[in-house]
Image 1 (cartoon, rainbow, N blue to C red):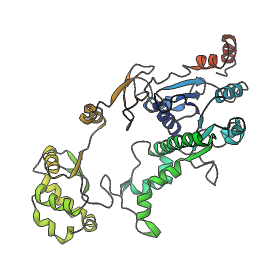
Image 2: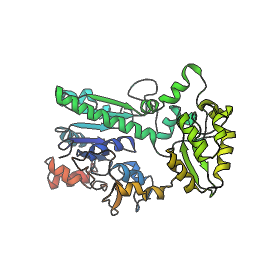
Image 3: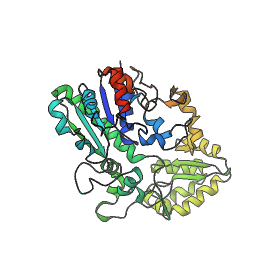
Image 4: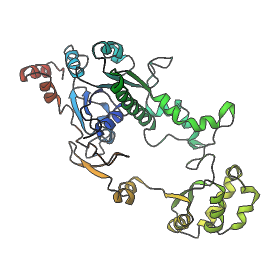
Length: 392
């Protein structure tokens, strides 16, 4: 038994935030019916062709779902959506602002007939306020939330290399839905959930915002180094490979000077006598560290750091992560089916030992349309007529 076995989720979703949310629900056993546009589907299907001809984004966020093609603007669509929602537990949507209400899928409309239904709306800026109708994509939200102001280097601000604003919104939607299901178990009532990408991302910006509280200087742009803790970031070894390391306190600073650098006199060097001073003098300290590292390979540096218990990491590329020995040792990889064959997929993080997560196939566009409609009572002739009318 999985935690969400028996829970039915209907989702009108595209791109990343909502699909990432509903994939988490599917991992826990929920039945997720993904409504897609006939002919084209979720536009994330066309982002690239990197996974045996399939989109990397789509493969990542859409396993274990059923794909139903439906033109939601077609006159016949409302009856199909009504039938889908008759026994649904959750409706998730990240359509354009106001689109769900125009389709009769707003919470106020649905709750009268379906009082147990949980409706989760995911948007860029929320369902009210002056930014309500602005288009919002991941990079734009990273910028609007101030993330770009604290990443990169002074001459080149940088976005995150993955869709962190989408991921943040998707995870807050996921946890809010789980909370709403728990609350419904006590009250018997569903609810509306409003998740905005901006608010999700600003929550993640809490540290730099408080660091710059009431007009104080914000964290400096510092590339891959920590903005306010030093030494904490990338350092070059003698074999031209990069070692990532991070010191957190004065005890580690002493061990680093004495046992890693072999320069105990640095412990009492006034330039480096506190973290704030080391951070201010990072250029001089980097030169000292990399000069000491120049006589060692990256592996030798890591060996010394490990010996004294100083945190470190390799700067892995994607192929290194696919082959990561820790993930292999913990047996974290499984295979999932796709329309283009099987591909590896990571087990969901943190799954308890008392159930196995659901990791079913990534659906082809409209793969489940006929079976879902038959389940709703449509016969072959009616399904054919809907297809002829381009409703499905």
